[in-house]
Amino acid sequence: MNENNLIQKELAELNSRLAETGREQVFSVPAGYFENLAEGVLRRIKALEAANASDEIGSLSPVLKALKGVNPYSVPAGYFDSLEAPMQMNAPISAAEEIAQLSPMLSSLDKKGPFAVPAGYFESLQPRSKTKIVSLFQVRWFRMAQPR
Image (cartoon, rainbow, N blue to C red; front, side):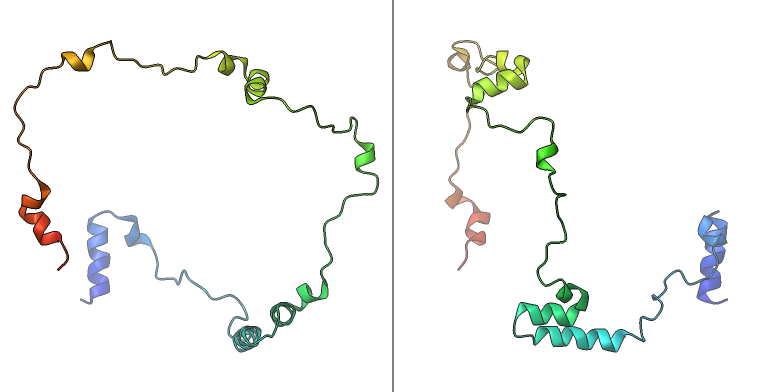
């Protein structure tokens, strides 16, 4: 029994869906890939040897070179004239005024933190046990970690 049949048998025993799959190839190469491969490689090599950006674009994509720096996007004539209300710059306002306009609830919040510790809390704490303070230079691993 070869290895592939053994694997198929194990998958069937495990009730795996993989045992039901066929042996068809799931990966493919695009049509014409190898016919155009040499031409594409030479085009990229030519682009690397280009003296300027225009020559490089021309060797990689003749369509892009034909555009000649023309912006393909445009606004129809009279577009801004036909807007209902012209956009006007309002007088500058402070950040607080802008927040009040955008969110009255947010502007009504206090500027202090929401959490607080009772007065004298840390002064009243008693240490639970004595803690030994060890210098890092006395620890063995620290000496081993230092570069020599």
